[in-house]
Image 1 (cartoon, rainbow, N blue to C red):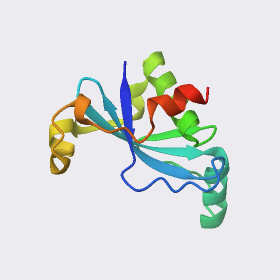
Image 2: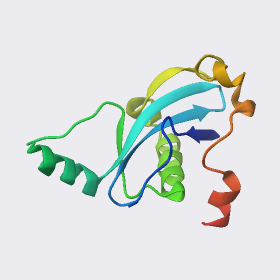
Image 3: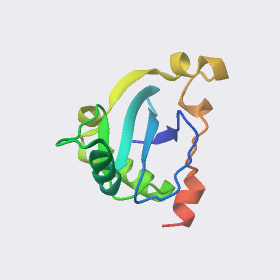
Length: 122
């Protein structure tokens, strides 16, 4: 299934191996899902900083790294393996979530991870 990615906050990842990032994933059926991607290093640092004995987050996916290619590959794998609905929460449809941009459906959505960038850097 085709998907596009939007970042609710600007993509400002400095270390792709140590960060976390919120994402909106838009499916070709116009459904929009929300999730937060974490790296293991980032989780360990957050736990240490906050002196926590456990870590959890809703709609969380642990990824190896947060490059555009890494994000795309992880999301594609989750979709292909059938775990998408278990990992992320549906927050609405394109017409509702992106009405301020006047986007009506999947074809209007501008992905922040460009297909040509992914293909070129495989």
